[in-house]
Length: 128
Image (cartoon, rainbow, N blue to C red):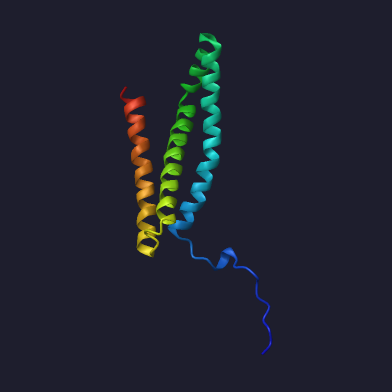
């Protein structure tokens, strides 16, 4: 029997795109996004430590609508990453590893992150 030349490892072209694959990619992306969000918080804390002048400047910048969108997305990234970590704790405890369970916990991750983001912004920003 002649040996066929095949790749030593599978390539992305043979995989079927799934929710768990998307969840894994987004979990990594939200982890990176939180570094940027942390820098924004540190900038605000540093301005607060320097006094009212620098704090007023930073608060004025953070009041722009585009910066508010960035903060909204950073809040979503925080919750998405948090619930993604909880999802991995569930999987590490050997629960919900069947195909239906995996899809269910990924969907729950999305719903919980969106609901928590909207709740935080509704309570602390929109209707304060």
